[in-house]
Every structure is written in C-alpha cells, then in structure tokens.
Image 1: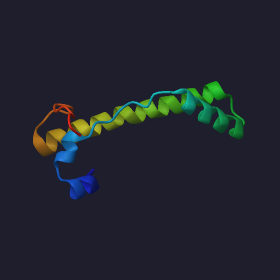
Image 2: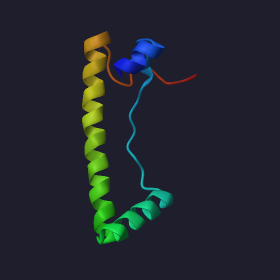
Image 3: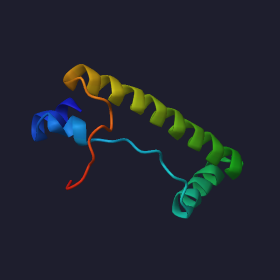
Length: 84
C-alpha cells in the first residue's frame, strides 16, 4: 500500500477494497489440474485452497481497517468507489 500511495497519493488507501475470491468454473478447472498434477483429490484440494483464500481475505480486511483508522481516522469502506 505504501508503494501505491507513493505513486498515486494517499487517497489510494480510501479507494482500495479487498474482495473475497469467488470459485468460478475457470478457477475450479485450474485447481483441478493442479490437484491432479500433485496427486491430490481435486475436491479436497479446492476446499483447502478456498479456505486459504478466505483466511487471507479476513486478514486483509483487518489490515485495511487498521490502516484507514491510523492514517485517516476513517472506517474501512466508508467511501464509495464511484468514478474509479
């Protein structure tokens, strides 16, 4: 975030939102191929990866909430991302 803020200005913090990764068909296909290449059950592998992504999302939200409070005294996602 600091690198982005240096390049685009501090408002980038307010405009950045993290999103949960959704399991679209193309992603399932890629993960199924990865599972087969690793000799793993595709459903278990997909579940494991999805769990990791969800955990990373939760951690990212905590970090963003802390950053916005510390830098601007604002709540995360307080500003709409209209016009970006």
